[in-house]
Image (cartoon, rainbow, N blue to C red; front, side):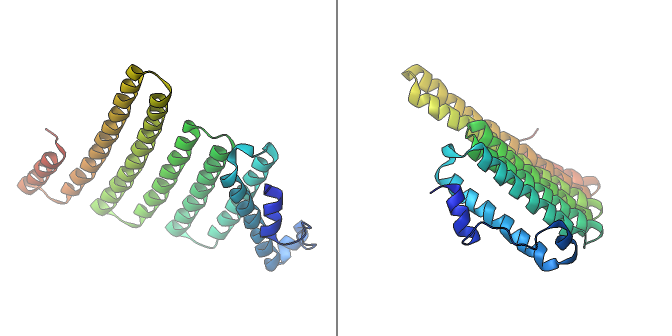
Length: 236
């Protein structure tokens, strides 16, 4: 089924836009705005379902339509953030921006599938989640905030490391299927190295969090805490 036909089913019979979706109505009718958002979501769902089934057949027009739907939804989300204030507004904006970037990256990966595109989508998700978590830390103070920031960064580091390792392992596995026995052995080694490097990056990030938590102590107690962290994560 084509994306156009699927969008028609999702949005309802008939592709005519409601008569009251003109710009002047949007300024005065709240229900019209909601209706427009529903239409945007319907289009995005229709395209996503179509893309998931036949990613390789996505046309340039379909990609543009999907991008427009994502941009419109993100714009609506940012407008909604305007009703909030202080850090709650900052968190809301970070969430809206993050979701937009992730949706665009995932759409691009469906439009032109590749290992790098999949990696970029995972990277966008990690960065978006970090941005939100980092903003939430601003509700805290002192060492509690410092630890919060380190934990947010550690989570991002873990996600990025996993995304990078996944890309390298996928590439190595593909090479193992397509090349000679010697090349396959080398590909297996590259995959193992990628997983090892990811594990080390995650350990380093977790160590940074553990060390930051020690700052609540002083003197011998802090030294003991730091030494415990070093022992746990294999640091000298």
